[in-house]
Length: 311
Ligand code: RRO
Image (cartoon, rainbow, N blue to C red; front, side):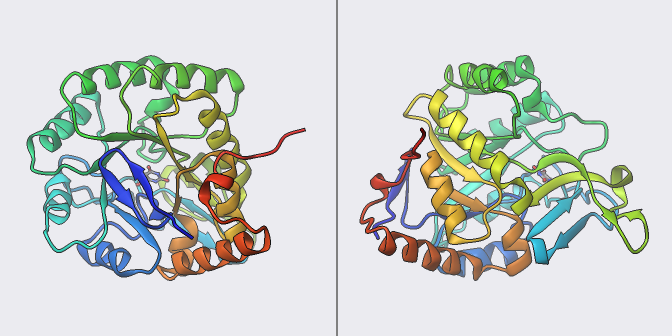
């Protein structure tokens, strides 16, 4: 299968990316993604201006039998300069996507100004959906602030930029966010981040499984697949066709990838299952996807992307 896909100035030759936050905090982890088979691009951990240690541990739990996770990492990252230095290294063999975040509108703008002034010309992704910093709301649930940030950013930022969204749960909200996003020259929309503020209880101890925020945290894995598909589909139907889509959420097998493609994803990113299984997950997913293509006699991605059938 020819997986060639283009987003802005970047050409990808596979479908899969590590979801921001997973296997991407250190250069060693990023290198492991670079070296993995079937990888389209390497995503860096969402970077703040300065290094952050993140929330107290335990701050992540996986339930491998059900392919589910919960996290409250709290944005641990080595700081913008660290990741900038990484993506500017000349020997990288895959395209990179530089994930940027900020704890305030001022910090977001300052971080993107730094990226604008740098020699980095690749894709960047603005994360407006982190659910785990105590006291900080998920920005993209506030439509007015999201609009203001994008207005301020696109007044100076002219390199390719995507945005990472939280899940929405109401058709009116899909209408509202799409209307805002359609006003800006976004390269792509990445949907969804983890489903914020779930709660998981350990039946042996009757205790929450994570310390930060009394156990509340972002859900990932199989449990969020239907929400992820709904968001990819709803946004694909509402966004300008020039805005590409990265589908994220609930990908544990080839069929999940196929479903994201049907809903309109151009690329697919993998978070929880990558954390559970490691970087060999991408080759497995590609193999399972190809078995589905063979069975259905599909020879081109165009036959699948956005081709969801309805009654
Ligand atoms: O670091 C985190 O706690 C985190 C982030 Br920034 C995010 O965007 N999504 C998530 O599930 N965790």
